[in-house]
Length: 214
Image 1: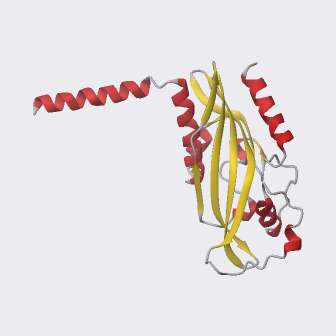
Image 2 (image 1 turned 90 degrees about the horizontal axis):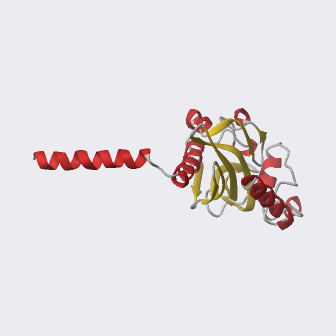
Image 3 (image 1 turned 45 degrees about the vertical axis):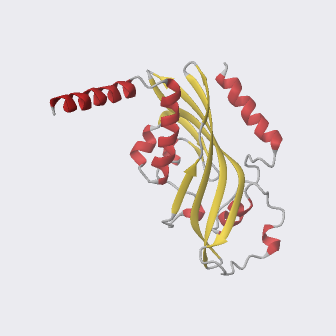
């Protein structure tokens, strides 16, 4: 029994040691994953702690500091309780005390469309700039890049009563995001960065890598 307890103590000490000796790559990955989980679970205090005090966050509904992002939501999602976020693996570029991260994200939330409950699913690529300050990695910038989206009734077969003319000309990277945002009475920026405008995407990446390698 004593030998068994000793083995457990050694394993526990090893786990603590591994955590304390987390590599920069592991620390950045853990930070990004934590930020997404805290965001979708409304753990605002922990979410704010992922960001540096001077961080900038750019999404489809706001562009500003931590206070304009934490605890707030997009106009079409306000008052809705259903919000699910699923992410893929992070692609991390490290250079000393800086890191640039690409993180694919899929967010689904309920919206009301012409009196009918629907689900808006947004496919995005989140671009993070992360810096190690005083030995701690913090997010200093986050940019949401739109890839595509979908809109469907919560109850299959219901009619969302969408007039095709109302979506004519909307960009494929954020068509239903724009439609639901405006239906909620809010403004929507048609010039948001999206994968349907490769030249804008290239500019974002050029700036990010220039910052990383500076």
